[in-house]
Length: 259
Image (cartoon, rainbow, N blue to C red; front, side, top):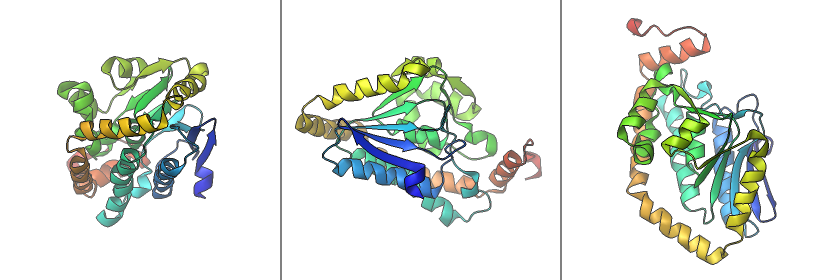
């Protein structure tokens, strides 16, 4: 099943990890474990010099967490998923040894944002949109507390994380959250062109240079994401969070006052 929802292939020294869980690439435990395994495979694959993370689902990169992970689940099950999404994905990227490029072809939300920003470079199609909607269903975008202020600044990060609003690719570019906006029709070609540029570099120097780069930017980030797991879990099991999640499933406004 994992081979069907996450594909791995190498062509011309470029490894492609492709999400394919229609309709929106919602993240469940199986999918994120398959993504982590694919990055670990790429790390050991001497035929791959660069890794692209992309989606096979039209206009959807990933809508974020499958709510079945959170709704009515014990904290142990939630923590198991976040261990994969927050910590194991980070470790796989940290130890990858080659550049990774997120190719955002459409909507990226919540956990989809987590996967995208785990990569070294983010390319987005002109119709791509971004957002942190967790607050609207009563949970926290906890991992983004650790890195988003560093990327775009404290005040702009707070506004995005606590408003839950959607923003487009041009705003993401202006904020410094992504590297480049490309016409939708040209996105795949642009990603391959960038990947080919990285692949042409010295394999040894690129591996050693990336390792040095990751050590310099870590800044205790590993401990921060471990704390984010606990922050998320503590909120997700509250009555307010469960009401927010049920309201989303039932397509109604949450009744926060009743909880």
